[in-house]
Amino acid sequence: MRSLLVLLFLFSFSHAQILKESGITHGGEIEFTNDWIYAVDSNEKVGKLRGREFPAARKMAEIVGKKCRSLGCKVSRVQGKWGYEYSVQLQDGWWFQISYDPLCVEIQTKPSTLQELYFHQELKEELIFGSAREAGLESRPNRATHMNTGARSAFGYDLRNLFNYFVDNANYPEFSSGVFRQNWNTSPPLVLNDIDLDQRIKSIQTQIEKGQIKSFGQLVLEIIRRLHSNFLSSQFNPNRNQDLTFRKLTNLAQEKENLSHQEKDVPFERRAVRAVRSFSEFVLHAEMIESRIAWVKTQRGFIPFKRKAPQVLGSYGREQFFKAWLVETNLSIERYLPVIKAPSWRKPLNLCQKFYSN
View 1 (cartoon, one colour):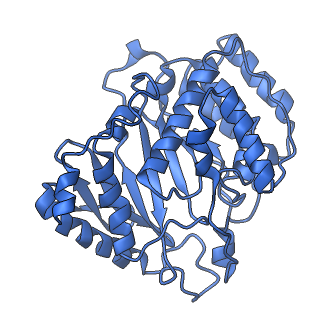
View 2 (cartoon, rainbow, N blue to C red; view 1 turned 135 degrees about the vertical axis):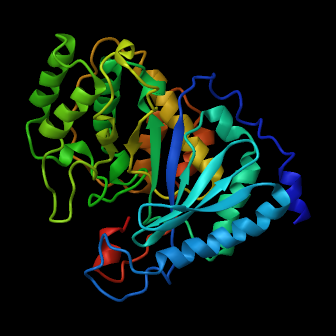
């Protein structure tokens, strides 16, 4: 426990100069699981709780609570999506929530700037990932981390740049075809939608240019209606199950002057991210998102859509693709390449595991 006390005095300055202060916020949903949660009992359990997720979350919360007695943080039981969850409040104001979803324990983190993520990074690593390991939980490659980035802090009221970010992501289906993750049940690339994407994207760009789309909310409704309308399977929700979804932005106001209340920094969500194995890996993903946003903002006019057939790349192909993308984004190959070094794939034991595999 003495070593944990030392963590309170450790500051993570090693990454502090990677990017300039931008104010962009990054939150996440980090998934952990184990064989006990995944125990074979029914093939009809896809999308449903098995009754073992909450006990696993409670066990992790108990471990965090013991650490907090000497670290000064506080664990509280709160009402969540499925029932009781656990909120962990650190002394510096940062927080995370120990929640759960079907087949996993899910850690929801406070929307934070990169500088806030760097601060006490070792402490966050110990409380989240160290405690998860002690509770018998694992960051498995068949689970995900959903990266949530604040739309207002990232793009203000700039419709063109927000849609450019969407199109830029669509131009790289490799990320959701094995580079970061490959689960087309829950996070497929846009190109899998069997529609005339080229013309529909150009039409939305024209609407933005002519001022016919006036808010983030209107833009998102157009994306949902015209680009995310196909059902790829019987268990597929096209509003949610995409590699990049803006579904939470539908209520964002048109102009700042029209606001009668303080608007939340509602996030867009990158779902095609393999479960991160450490808090530092979570931070690396946030850095890459922020760097790509900065790159998008340097592009003139609208980014053209480039249709590619999604292909599952081998390890060499993934590495070569990722290196080229990092160079284009002006990021260090050495720093970020380890992110795509995934553990060995495990053969799914039943239909439920198969649905969440890769």
